[in-house]
Amino acid sequence: MTSPTKNRIESLDLLKGLVMVIMALDHSRDFFHYSAHFYDPTDPTQTSLIIFFTRWITHFCAPAFSFLAGISAFLVGRRKPRGELSAFLFKRGLWLVFIEITVVTFAWFFDVHFRNGEINVIWALGMSMIVLAALVHLPRTYILVFSCLLIFGHNLLDNVHFNGSILWSMIHEYSLFKITDNFTFEVGYPIVPWIAVMSLGYYFGSFYDKSFDSNKRKKLLNILGFSSIILFIIVRWFNIYGDLVKWIQFDTPLKTLMSFLNLSKYPPSLSYLLMTLGGTFLFLANIENLKGRVVNFFSIFGRVPFFFYILHLYLIHIIALICAQLTGFGWQKMILNYAVIDDPSLKGYGFRLWVVYLVWFGVIALLYPLCKKFDIYKQNHKEIWWLSYL
Image (cartoon, rainbow, N blue to C red):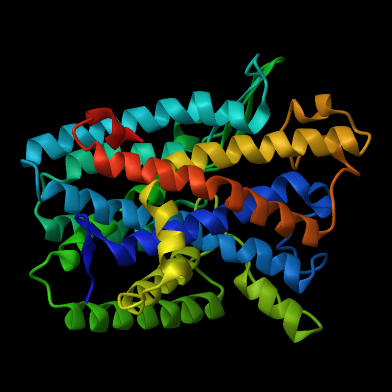
């Protein structure tokens, strides 16, 4: 049975921590892998299995975290009046949007002139909280219907385009805008269907109420997980609806498999969400009785995810700056004018994949004690209101 530790649910912390650690692998690859500057790691015609898997496994991070954030919102709401929960979600959402365009953007570019603006996963989480602040006033069944309609139906908008519209891009289309000669703006995470992933998590939050039978929860999550994976295979196999990128049959089964699993993330397609949320459901269903040092290790990151997220971006970029200097490119090249994988001045920079994994391990090892200390501080100072925003 799921056991609360200091009013927290360990299985949720475990999964949240695991996806944060895996996410750090993707960002390490961005800054340190040689091939990141030459080809898409999920392109079956150019990639290898290990490079493909290194990128593919990180696809589970954003959907799982957004879904878990919705569950957390429900659990927090049990202790608050509905209006107070709504106000908290709205303010926290605005805070995350602000952090995205300031602290997070600077972490990616190290450019004091802010010649690039990006709105990515933290923005999507913030906007999802703002929308959820309104949705919590609806009956839970309505929230479920809203979530499913958006997740299953949003690909109908794939062929809807309003060229040059930043607003439409924020809603449902990845775009890069040249605002002025000195400023570009990238919309990496349109809010549809991310807002539905979080609201779906909010609906699932009641399954983690103390009164809900754990065996029933496990059975339900397993059924939903297997059903989502099977539906993903069916939808993907027909190759008609559910993803902008159609899979291709290549001359080898391995390339064909990679093509089949190469799904659209910006915005996340129906196939992408069926695959990743299906995996999330299955994982949640079967980890509730896990105990031990490994579980405790990942749970630390899951209890302070925002703190870890900010620190890991800055640490990775600082290490990259040092590596650029040591390899003859010069640290100045890491004061970026473009996204790190798109900067033409960095072609030729980077290392083999084992170095990426070594950096990743190092980042996790360095941040673990800091995260552990901050977790203890948060647990011992719950009276400090602003800690809930970190």
